[in-house]
Amino acid sequence: QVQLVESGGGLVQAGGSLRLSCAASGRTFSGYAVGWFRQAPGKEREFVAGINWSSGTTYYADSVKGRFTISRDTAKNTVYLQMNSLKPEDSAVYYCAATGKRFNLRVPANYDDWGQGTQVTVSS
Image 1: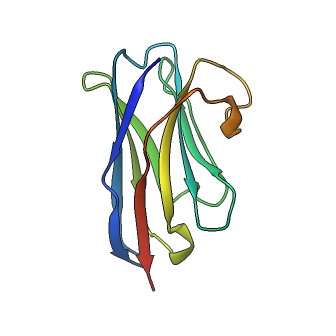
Image 2: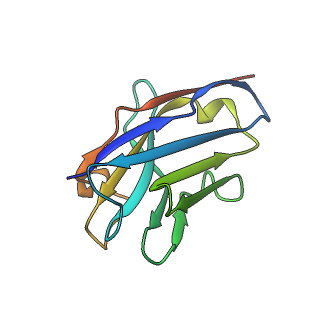
């Protein structure tokens, strides 16, 4: 099991940028895939972006492709989500999650460990 702590959320105007961090403790991310998800009020939790820790392979939801970038820092055992050109519809609580699975990584139910979430609010 890995403990995850997100940080970096906040309030930003439309068109602005934020960088979220997901730090792991208890063990390293080695052998895991790490995903970012978000959940807006009244909506289901949805996949945003993911990264295979070992290979560095990344994958994105269509709604954020070209605007968001997921990356990792192996020395800091941390995953980042750089969010640019933010839109009001990006407002949500953002969660990072980790899984040892290698398939269906866009499905929240396939993740074992979750952080507490960080709020992102984009004003118009």
